[in-house]
Image (tube, rainbow, N blue to C red; front, side, top):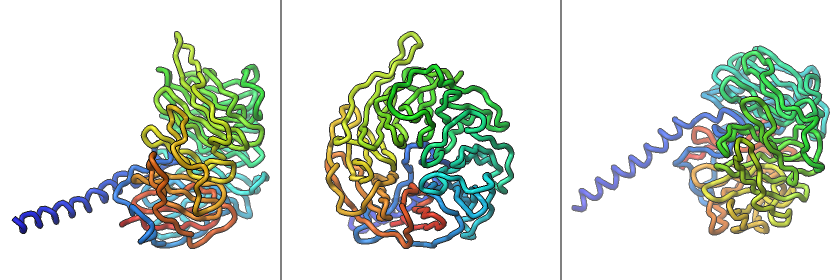
Length: 430
């Protein structure tokens, strides 16, 4: 009996080791901003469950990404990002096998001028194509294997967009045969282009739209999301005047919500859950839950609740929904971890707990845990537990420069950290 039990135990353990490798192989790619579903969540399992006894091991460090705060996208053995160089702002392809830059393609002839100089856009991979937005508003389609430029156009020149104080920051959304991004201007709040040719399919006029008095007439710093709430396919984005929903078929403005806007910078991507949208900004603003309803084809966004800034506000770094709860850093430029019940707005824990790190926190979810990357470079592993705050270890990366705002990426069992020109790869295997 003992022998049979022992053999069975060994078999189960071996199976347990095998399953994560298949999961990692299946979900190895991180093809766009905030991952496969643009929600900051990795589907990989079998990762290092705690960093207390064993911290992630640095496997290697590369360079040549240029200056910037953009995160990275990964497909196969290629990693893509954007960065500033002496000759301008470029798209960079980094070979993960050879651990060196495979190619870079300049899309601006000079370094774009704005506050906190550096790139913002995480490239979007779509088949053999790559789609990007430079911080001067240039949008382009490239061949992801060699960097060849098929087309490019500029949001300021063609759509009258105003350059945000800290530059354009969107990562283009690819939906079927379309590219969608925001201009936030009187001519076009959102722009929909044929992804292959770059020709306009539709744009959403903003001149006559009553978007409210808070905020600025600009694109904001978030990226566009696909939403199917209230039985209507739409594109949702946080722009300078707040959150908007646009009819995916024709670009018609369906609804807007201004109270979450602030006059400085509207940054975090909203969270979409069924017919509900959770949105937040920093700079003393707060957060809100919206319920989208369909009244004979007319879409209404009804405020369910509003959280004041002292209850919850996400500066930047993003918010993660796990089940019925939202996890994020709160307080302006503080990144204090917190957990909010989405349907009620009740704070479950946090807001005043932060034993490690300082500044805002960029957050990624993987295998039941949240990876908080603080502005000072510190990384913390926090359990996605709605009942209590559980810190499961932290560490300082090998290299840190300026503000560590680039979002961490988990792909193929590894943690990738972009730090300006440098790229660090850490092992997350148990």
